[in-house]
Amino acid sequence: MPIISITDLSKTYASGFAALKGVNLAIERGEIFALLGPNGAGKSTLINIVCGIVTPSSGTVTVDGHDIAGDYRAARRSIGLVPQELTTDAFETVWNTVSFSRGLFGMRPDPAHIEKVLRALSLWDKRGNRLMTLSGGMKRRVLIAKALSHEPRVLFLDEPTAGVDVELRQDMWRLVRELRAQGVTVILTTHYIEEAEEMADRIGVIRGGQIILVEEKAALMHQLGRKRLILQLLSPLDAVPEGLAAFGLALAGQGRELVYTYDTKSERTGITGLLTALSDAGIRFGDLRTEQSSLEDIFVGLVRGEAA
Amino acid sequence: MAGGMNWPAIWAIYRFEMSRFWRTAGQSILAPVISTTLYFVVFGAAIGSRVSAVDGVPYGLFIVPGLIMLSLLTQSIANASFGIYFPRFAGTIYEILSAPISPAEVVLGYVGAAASKSILIGLIILGTSALFVPLRIDHPVWMLGFLLLTATTFSLFGFVIGLWADGFEKLQLVPLLVVTPLTFLGGSFYSVSMLPPVWHAVSLANPVVYLISGFRWAFFGTADVSIAVSLGMTALFLVICLGLVTYIFRTGYRLKS
Image (cartoon, rainbow over all chains, first blue to last red; front, side):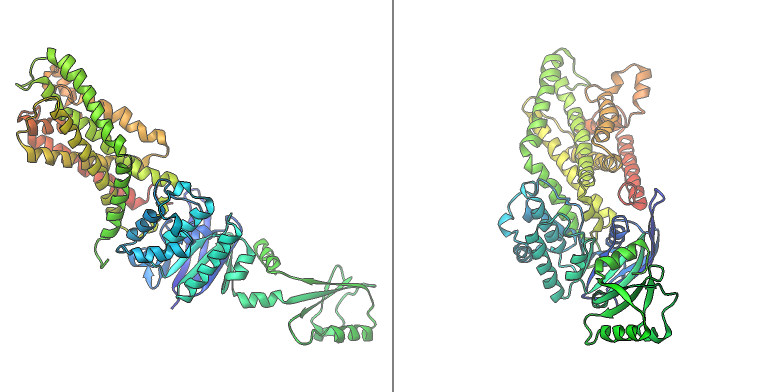
């Protein structure tokens, strides 16, 4: 059973803006899932609904088998949320605000756990500091500590590395890996592809309130390994000659370009064979170039609504 | 937490809210002491010496319940409205909304803390008054009962204002334009029976009259309206505020989109 099941989830705000349009998504237990999408795609709305901050217009969500509306206590108890905005209580100390969060989630005080969390986030020395005296990066750490204070089974990180320095980013990824090792499911939203690439087991792409792709990262990376060889023909072709059908060629540029797609990671790219075959067929070319599609290209293609 | 209420959460909110009070303890305690002293200097010593006793109670003593009520109402509203408005304003409300807490528990935490603070202030004013006049409390249990009931009711009312307000100025609007006039006209410093018949009748439409009257009865055993009516009106206002809060949470108004 997936740890989070989202079924036909829609959200139309009072303004009439449809932020989510029939989203279906299953998050597997223990995975790191990256939700990629441009600004305004519905990433935060989706997270906020699962966490109970926004009321859905229709559809259902279950967390660890608990309905987020009917059984909200059990559903929310297993969730930790690190919001996008740096919202903290200026006058509270680090220790108090993190302890407050634990209490809010119905847990008995456990100073040993709070200490562990603060140490993991390099906040231990700052535990007596008031939040308003902390830098932006430190506040972000505090928000993560708050989210981990009640030992959640699922952690949401909404744009965790927006405006974050390299050190914190590395600390954060180390922490996320540790959490996964403990069986915690992590869902992060981002519009940085490298982030998804570095961390995620699976990647979902959201655009215009709809999930348009959910893929194992490995499968996406496989597409990344593909390259295209483009041959500039001396004389245009109307169609790919039948004798070359086996190469899966495509015509482009009004028949002036012949495109061959190959896998750089395979033992044989087939390029030599292709060139020989072209020579045999009497097709001549004046120039050639190769192109590699990055995850970014795939992503940009997807969010623009084109085939990747 | 095994089923039932999320007590740790209520306690966490309550403690968090109270910590603000203690953090600014100097202000929280000094302000009511100073204002009470001022009232006693003006109304008790300067004017009071020329005013005859009301219902057999010396004027300086007579204004004690009204003074406490005045602060109780304004403090309850200010504390509770600020308590819930600030997290909305700062964005930290996300944590309350995403926590496994029922609306009733949220209200209990915030309103409980706001009421506790204003009751503390009420008692401080009572203590300060004792420095100026020999206190007399005929029905101490009723006095505490009214203190508790009024603080709770007006903290609830403040909570509603804090949910409704979408700016700091609106937070001040209702206390300034509605509550303060009602309190002053509600007989804080006089008995409404001292008014001409027409204004007496108009005053009876002011809910604060019933609060002060009941509270004053607990002190001196005399009242403008019967104690049952006072209790009934206070309870009615409590129920109205509870209804409003329930409605707000059910619809998510100004809390959730």
